[in-house]
Length: 299
Image (cartoon, rainbow, N blue to C red):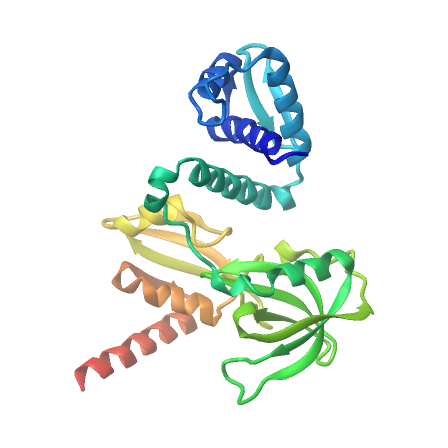
């Protein structure tokens, strides 16, 4: 299949995905004014071919609403994959637009995750084949690197870092490793079977970031400024977030999460915009760290 025809499939998919619901006349208009059409109108046959090709390339159904004659992409993937689907589609859409709008490409600044460049493909390949990884890893708090066998279960991105989460055969535990701390990784000859009852999304369901806790998740109440509340309403801190109370100049949100280093750092980054109402131990930890930071500046 030529690159040219793949680009046409991508264009068709991207157009329907970007506009959510769009008529055939609108698609034909945008085709005619795109740089990929070479000024030639989109024939009925080509329209059908590109629609079918886009469906096969992206494994989606592009349907037509008979009441409005609008085309749209049916979301058919299960809930556990919908986040990946949207991320993939959005990434492809931005990538396509940047490649075909080179005159403004310098004005589009996507977030770069450097830690995924060297090892991400190898880890995904191992996950696909069920192969054990022989990994040499140098943690920040270790004096030297360690080599061990890892059964890679899944990968996760957080704060400009990629992480691989898997079963460490030497420690007999599921652990998390940052890709930018990997010294060397290779596929071993050993294989493993991915556990049927393991759910990556559920694994971090009560965590903020990439750190879990051996303790139970706790109910947390945060009081934030009215300004910060707008940000949390638009982009929730955690999936468990629910609005509890609106007061004079503040909004209270409730959560159920592990109390971890990642969560504490996030709350500290919000400064005076947030106050921990409970639990008391989290409130005290935040207060102690803020006081320690203040002491540094009072010296």
